[in-house]
Image (tube, rainbow, N blue to C red; front, top):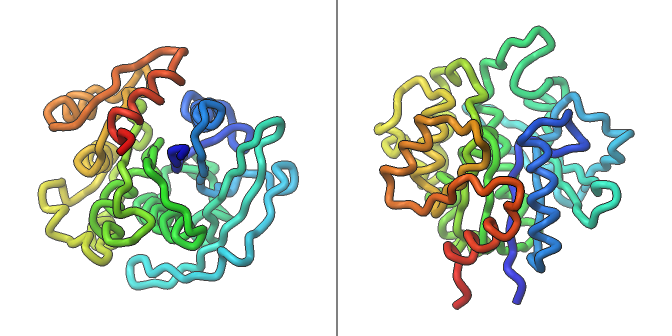
Length: 269
């Protein structure tokens, strides 16, 4: 039986501009799929994505749910597209307030959005709720980018009893620092959901930032990957202090290293 890997990516080319993360966001799922794994791939429907050019269309049967973030209802919209010349289908998490009318982490003036934390929470819950609706049971969830950093916490707490995620292992890729500013005082309150209780966040600073997000992701992950030569050194050192496997930067020939890492974390029964 082929292992199932869910990729939760912040960026994927060709939908957003080339960067180390967006190129990896495309190449890793493709190589893992070619290696015989069954995959699903998610990313945010950033406002700078050209829906017509990317041939995105809404999946009505998956859309329509309301997610409550910071005591406010936010409708969940799911769109889908296929990356040209590949067999990779990408699911996009969309919402009028958080994504449709916005750029990525910063606005047109280069200023970070003050509600980036709530956007990451909405994205995380949107992905997990959609995977449940797909009736798909991933063996591994691989998170790439700060937008996916809430996923490990939720998988191990709020969704740990869900059949889709009861036995799922979580892998987090570390990249260089991306956010310069804190996520705002509402983040801790907003992240609370089911068993993801507020007291679980007491060990982190009240003002969440890129480092605190990364620490939280590491704490609830089953494996950590050094995905770049320029990984944030604080997070890399933090991962080394935890009882969690760390894959050192494997260079360009990463496909076999990633597959071996997946197998070590989630061996065949």
